[in-house]
Image (cartoon, rainbow, N blue to C red; front, top):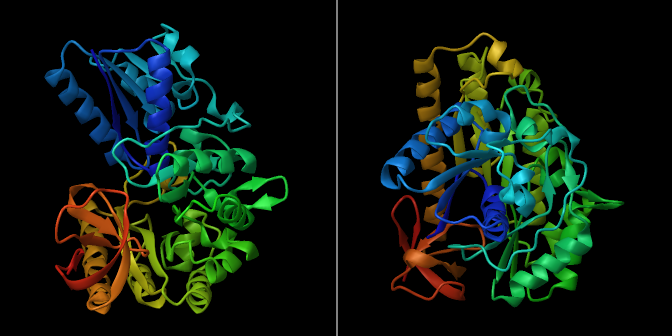
Length: 406
């Protein structure tokens, strides 16, 4: 008998899968596979469905329970699959009582969720870094995004609970903590915002060797966060930005809250405060109504912001979102633009890797013979090392994708 969890999507899902493991076990679940889904794109939902069918073929006797954002937003889709035994919503998946129930579909109204409960975990299975959820949900309604309907409105974990969870994980040997959520820059606990939370964690949990932020919305960055980036060496010099596009009209049609010039100014400001910082970013290729000139401004933004790592999304319409009702581009055009963005990403990554050769970097060792620098750059180790150590290593070369340690 066993309980296996298959996790798709973001770091938040990874953190929540550990809670699922505990709560499902407490609910008496075994000989089951839990599929914790993502709904960020139509392709993500398609992949979840394909994997559910594959799991059933490989483990015909196991019960399959589907949960996560896709299950929350499209419960009927998964309930209609003959391979699926139960569908649980995003709130229900974290509650042992729901796991003890027998309703085939238990998906509540996520918009009614107003608080975020602490679900302390002792470890993150298979990961050297520990993810701490500080926030969930989103109050914004970008026209391409369905995530608020899978996660609900924004709510934050009290700072005391965040500190307690960080202490718990560092006490279990984790050297690096990653703060995660849907929109972590919207974090607030009374008057405390994200920057102040970062400062408190580094002050109150000295065992944290490295603190890292997951994806942030640059327009929400507060003064304390800038100060922490400038003056807290344990806050890692790597920010992944939710930029999405480089053209102001497309940003407006996406209902984003920043402009092109604001994105560039943010990167310039952070780089002045923290010269060793690197930026990654999400960028959508082929958003409805995007002309070639508009797309060119997204390509140009890579250089103007000094981006190093790109996460490229070919636009795909999500049913129920405003962008799905806008004039769509030809799929071949979307695919071609996405490839040009990826090619640009390969170029800027290689350029950055060139600058690292010959330097000494602090590398957190992971499983599989790799590690990560302070800037989250992958490093191939010269020999397998136990995961979880932070070592000073000299970079000898790179292969275009990752660094190679001497």
